[in-house]
Image (cartoon, rainbow, N blue to C red):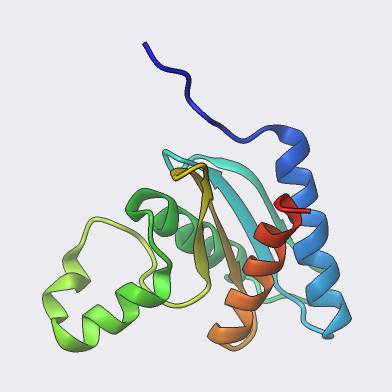
Amino acid sequence: MRSKQCLTTTEVQKMMTAAKAFASQNGWNVSIAVVDEGGYVWQAERMQDAGLTTVEVAIGKARTAALTKQPTKLWEERIKERPAFMTFPTEILIWGGLPILHEGECVGGIGVSGVAAKDDERVAQAGIDALRQ
């Protein structure tokens, strides 16, 4: 048997706090979701005035990033080249979801929805960056 890395509640809280702070600093009302490596929700939050559907989209982005171990923006690019990826068994194939990697292993995903896709990804990255501090 081998030891397996995994997120803890403390780490998830740290990521959510950093991501929300970054979004607030920029005046963005978004939803943020963190999932484990299997795509199960650790925490999801819709900030004040974020759109009603944004929390479901954030969860979908986080799941896609965790299950594929790749940023969701890669899937959006692949769809342009090969539309058959639309049937890929994941949820949301647009920018804003990032895998959470630790020591070369995927331990989860973080997804953000509510502003421009590239800015959703910046909020997600702020959450991941908090783990490295």
